[in-house]
Structures are given as structure tokens and as C-alpha cells.
Image (tube, rainbow, N blue to C red):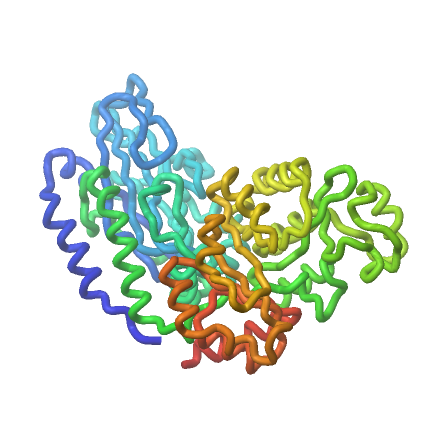
Amino acid sequence: MATVNRRSLDAQLESLRRSAPLDADGALARRYAPFLHFDEREPFFPSVVGYTIFRQGAPSASFPRDIQLTAETAFAIEYAIWWDWDIQHLYELEHIWVYVDGDGGIAEAEASWHGRYHQMRDESGRLPLREGRLALHSEPGKHAFAPSLGWLLLRKAKTRASCGARAGAMGLHVTPLFDGVILDDRPLNNRLVHTWLERQQFEPSFAFNKSFDLRSTSFVRCAQLLDWVPARVSAWLACLAAAIPPEQRRVLRIAHRGASAYAAENSLEAIRAAAELGADMVEIDIRATADDVPVVIHDSSLRRTHGLEGDVSEFTMEALRQMTAAERQVISFDEALDQCRALGLGLYLDIKRLTIASARAMFESLDARQYVKHTIFGSFRPDYLADIKAARPDARTSILFGAVDIDPVKLAQSINADYVHPCWENRAEQPHRLLKSDWIKAVRKANLGIVCWHEERPSEIAALKALGVDAICSDKPELLVEISAKARAL
């Protein structure tokens, strides 16, 4: 892959530094700036610190919390620490809070930890200090802060997965702080970020022998940092777009009804096999029972998959359980969701039929597990997707269609969809030939993603990937992994 041209990025960072001469508060922030201990294989380091001095209690401008001072605290310093990269997504903003007493010593300290924050006292109850300044451990790749190595060792398996197979999986992760401010969250950019970060993956050593002095970064007021962020994100995306040609961009690997070539479609076994074979997501079909429980099954009838008469919508969930107990039970959406969550798989939902009550139940389950951000809602029913997008603007939607001559952009824009999904596998021997260059250009100009399915021929998968589509579904998801591996070798 071509090297990213960093000259414009370096110039942008230098411009920020020059525009923020150090004032008295900045000097105070530098005085107490912490040391950070990094893994010896850590690829990413902070480049900017946004500081705020609190001399009385007030809300943080960059973290969802209030800063409170005790009678013994003279002031507090908030460090909003910027990384261009987390191993799973573009940009990172972590936080440290240092509380200084009337004698100028550090009385207390807190730091961010995966969306929350904790006191930075080690197992013995002491603040980790070095030369009178805080000295914290930073999680490999993810950068959450800990007062001692012990905290990080408890997350060893999760950290290794994040830095390995899950590298880049979150793409451009727009946090609530930047919602409506960073406007680059679209399918193509997520693929660029995924591609770049997958190639930065590493195996953490958990030997924290890289010492980093936060004073070596640029210090600016927090408000100035927050104003700078959107342009920084856009600049990185522009560099990646120039460096990574379409044929080298990482496609999402979606296992069609799970790895259905090797296990019964839409089953827990098929979902498990999909994870083992390297899928990023599983496509499952959703219908509602008579008592409004969302279940995972493709056909309206039970005949093909279970050899039973009757439609899914005619029976309660309990009745379906009893009817299908002898062989393979119909599984609930909750069961599939929990399986995907445990295996680290995203969800591509093909919504066949839902009632209002079952749709509500589906979203309640997703929200309870914070899984909407890991889900794409697809359907041939534009009314379903329009309702979903109206109720949940944060939901990503994909419109499926079989007609070759339909205008995909107008169709998607009419319901505010994020992806177009041409279902042409039965329309042509080589469906990739129907994806004409003008068709792709029009879709990309509208900032829409492209999903294709389901394909098991390596030559056709390679042809689709060469066109730069965003996702491919397959009954054999390992084929998508093999094609991606070949692309990395280019």
C-alpha cells in the first residue's frame, strides 16, 4: 500500500502549536503534566494536549462529568489528551485529572477508562508518582489509563483481540462529544480507516518500558483543541483516500445467515462458525412471532427449514420452541444477539417482517447491550427502514433491491439509507459486471456504501473487491478473508 503523505498533517499540527503560545495556565498545566508508560510495541502516541484549569467546580467541556474541588484542593487540571489513532478507530481523546493542594502537591488524580473514569490509586492505595508528577500506564492500542500494571493484565485477552483481529473494526468512531461536529462518518471513510488500522495491528508485549513525558506534546486550551479536531479528522481521511486505491480497501466480511455453508442457516452453530472463519458480521433474517417476539428465520413458512406446516407469524415463541425442539429450534433475536456479542461479531439484519411491538423489543435488546453501533439494519421494505431511521437517526440502514434499472441513489435518499444493496446474484452470471463505473461514482458521490451478496466464487469475490465495494456476504466467509490477505500483499 502506498505510504500516507504526512507533510500536510505535520503542517496542520505545527500550525496549531504556533497559534497557541503558552500562557500562565498553560505553564501550570505543563508543570504537572504526567508521565505515561507505554507497551514496548505501542504504535501510537499523543500529539496534543487540551488543558483546562479549574479553580472552582464546573462541568468538563470534553468529558461527561462535573469537576468538583474539596476544601483541600487549590485547583484541578484537566488534560484532554489527543491521539490521531486508537488501534480500533480514527482519533482518541483520553483524559487525566490532577488535583493540587495548597502546598503545590498532588492530592488526588483520576483518569479515563473506556468511557468512564476512576481514581488513579494503585492496589496499595497510593498515587503512582515520579519526580512529583503522576506516572500512569496506558493500555496498549486503546490508551485507557491505569495506576498499575495489574489493571491492564485483567484485560489482557480483550486488549490482544483489539490490537489483533479487531484492529480497525470501529472505523471512524464519532463519540457523543463530536456528534454533529465531525461529519465524515460514512461507509467509504470507515473502510479506509479499517484498512489502515488492520495493517497496524500488533501483539502487545505487556512490557511497559516506553516512558513518555506528556510535556513533549503541544499544549493548547481545550476549546482550541476541540475546534481543531474536525479539520484534523478530515485531513487524515483525505490522506488515506489518496494512499489506498479502491482494490486495496478492506471489505466487511459478512457471513450470510451465519456460515451457512457449514451449519444450519440462522442457527447459533452457523454464527459460531462465522466467527471461527474470520467474519466481521453475520447476516440474519428477522421475523415476528404471534406474540411479537423477534426471531431468526428467513422464510415466512416453516416448511423448508423445519419440515412443518404453518407460518412463523401464526405461532407464539413458546409454541415454536416446542414444535422445533426435536431437531433445530428457531432461535430468538436475543439469543443471536448474545452469541454475536460474546464472539465480537457485528449484525447485518435482513428484516423480513416486524410488528411495532417486536421492533420495539428488538431495539430494547440492542440498546441494553449497546449494540446499535455494531448493527446495520437492512430490508427490501423501504417503509421499515424509513421508520427505523426516523425513530433512530443513529441507526445505519441498508436498502435491498433486485431491479437492475432502479436508481439506487434516489431510492436510498428517499429513506435516508446509508447503504445500497443490489441483490443481483440471480440476475447475472457475473453480477460484478452490472456495477458499472458510472453507477459506482453516483453512489459514492451520494456518500453511500455498497453491500453485495451472496458470493462463493473466489474470482467473483476478487472482482467485486477490485471495484471497491464496502461489504460482501458469503455462505463461506473464509473466502473473504483469503481475498483480503491477497490484497494486503499488493
